[in-house]
Length: 299
Image (cartoon, rainbow, N blue to C red; front, side, top):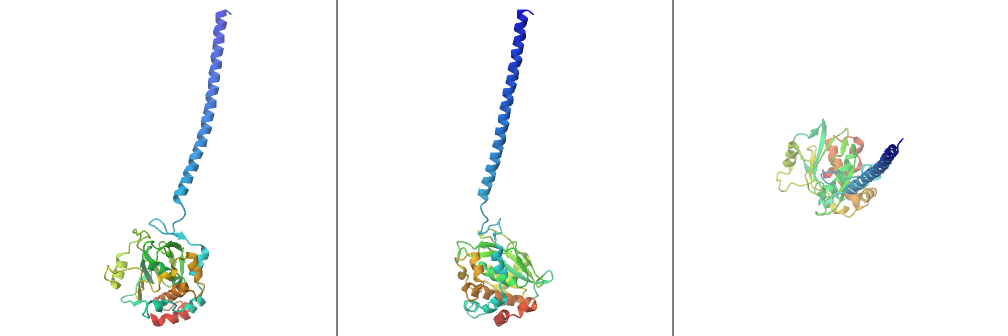
């Protein structure tokens, strides 16, 4: 083999070696890029997850058009829906007569019985921002629970810019009710921030207008008890709940002498009496209780 051939062969081997080395370097770079890229993707995913959690925050307790409020703990909900009959009997009329100045808390209804699904219907129209609705929802929840199951219970606060601001309360928006005795139809028309939430139907507006003809003075809460009785506004002073949390209000219901129990449960007994008129005094153990007997003269 001549010198020129040997040089040429050596150059070819060096060229191949150089190409292989370049390929190895490229492969190492690719591995580094793949590893680094995978790590970057993971970091981006984690970062996005953290951002989403931070922007979502905790469930709102003040309500809006996109929330049903804060799900109340089972211990709090059970204190509201399971008030003992003995406690309600001890409260009787409670603080209602003093608030209504001895006048009947409800207006007598008229016309055909209001029904839904073959059952007498209790129609409630209110608003989440309303402080008076905030007060009466507690009483309605207690009373309704004596005839059926109200679930789930979500907590909100009334408007911060109205009277009795930020009153802890419930919302009936997306709350279900099952009872063999009556139908409960809640309509929360407006959120805490006063955005539209639920529109009353034509027939519901007609019932509302029947008892409150002037739209300029028509207010919340409005409750029609099967056209037997009508509640237009609160029947106890909402200020008694001021500054208290959901759990504090629920806990106070255990003490029949507490101002909260005297107001909330006193109103609940009147509501129970109105419901008993709808259900022809069924169930008998509820409608013949000492609490209902005490309020009958005021209906």
